[in-house]
Length: 172
Image 1 (cartoon, rainbow, N blue to C red):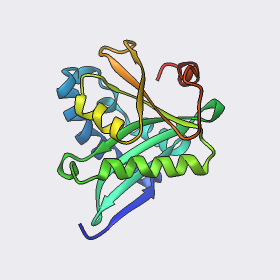
Image 2 (image 1 turned 135 degrees about the vertical axis):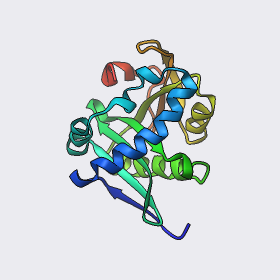
Image 3 (image 1 turned 90 degrees about the vertical axis):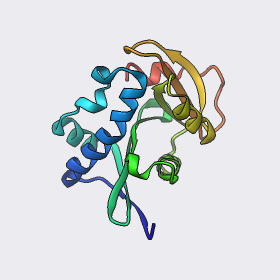
Image 4 (image 1 turned 60 degrees about the horizontal axis):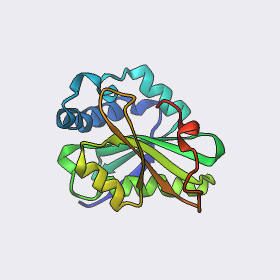
């Protein structure tokens, strides 16, 4: 690896965001045995473009190739929701996912965010372990999809342990 570059995705990056997301989430869907119900695999170009316009979407390029992408949005009460963290399988185990999480963390700190939240499949032990290693904790478990998801939180400021993140995040 010669260079790692992060850039905010623009309207011309829809195809790149879509490609890396599909590559990453194909493996995710197989692992949880729910290929038909993982929304990331069925996103339209219009939905991705909408995210680029309304959320914070970042790409990670390694030596000019798109290696990963991540999206987050700032919700009410200073709570952010991270979604679609995707690392191309060819670039996994190189630290790209951790770098993307750090990019989100830094952006959230600059925006005054108090905590970052996300959902991930609880069956994906390696993914849950990845988030735990990067400062997240399991806040609760949800069964609102066709698989069990861990609702995870990374506090950027001291928060009440019983803070109701779910009411802020809603059904995402």
